Length: 465
Image (cartoon, rainbow, N blue to C red; front, side):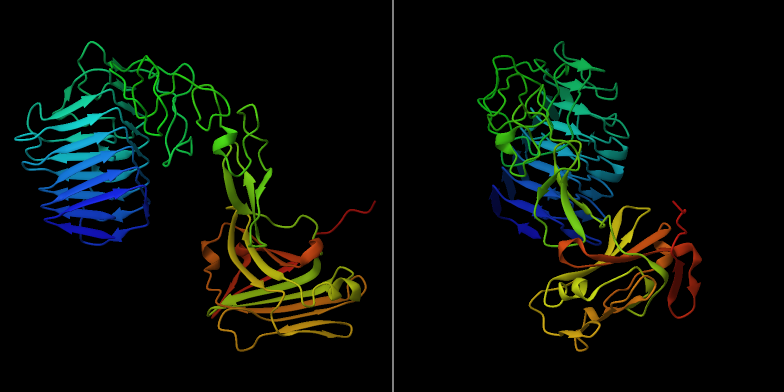
């Protein structure tokens, strides 16, 4: 996204996502011979096939404060790769989480002469849940005593919290394994971090909060910063890591130790007034896609999920063909459908939904808006035609009838799905307003393969009452 040459770039209060480079360094930001300063910034879900999934700094100063670098990946330095030569590195009050490197330094990789003329410091930060073959959290091959680490929390990093190279502890650090060379009297090795997952806990960026009973609480050596990564005032006893969890009042907008969430920080309504999460599956937001629904999860986050209708009309026989970017579905000898049911569809919003039930995912969702031309009532049914459309539903013909006589034929473009990549059961639904729905279920393992994938299904037999 950004390249900096022999200049200074300062970013504040922004989010950078989904950067990607091939055969280059720095999936989101690369700086050469200059300086990069990040404050209140989140860099997420970016990738480089070389060095620095989020940030690459070569012969440049790098300052990261109150920022989050998460979910990035690279060959080395999944989150940040710093090749300092004679330049300075300062990471403070920041979170590096969920970054991945196939080589070394899942969260942070420090190389070459760091601190030779200027200091390189890592203070009051959280490095957790990263992964690498060597040094899942942190790898440093800089000179002796060049990387100074203080009041920092390292936990649950696959491949070890630290690679066995040079760093110097200034105390107050906590690691939940024995891989880091922390030798100060105030350091805690093998401690219990008990971190929450990465989430919105107050403040402008996502963070991870120590739970009540975490060894990180009170483990910092001080003096404490006036505020933690979120902007929350710190307690008298400092904590290790980017988040001060020693104090907490439910309803103040910050998720602290002993709280599962905070209603003031929760716009989706998944957090109750007592700072406990609402029951899972509670609807938490409106979603434009009729095939999806936004529901609370067990951690109090509002997540969009597939939402197949529960009470749909089955067909005695069905056929589904997908190939060449088109979908054709024939719903035959279906459950009883009246002309009144169909009248509710004409001129109303409708949607084709294709679900992979084994994986719990939506493979395709194509909506027909209420205002779209092409609807017409044809006794005893309705038609929708949009033959000139390049994608979406191009035809839907639904006929009313008694049990075993109703029928639906539907065609769509822009659907290119490899049936053999699915996990078994495919469910197709044609949905209108007021919960009216028609569906068929297919077993993708029974596909007939030629120029298209063709599936046939019969309705399950129902036991006699």
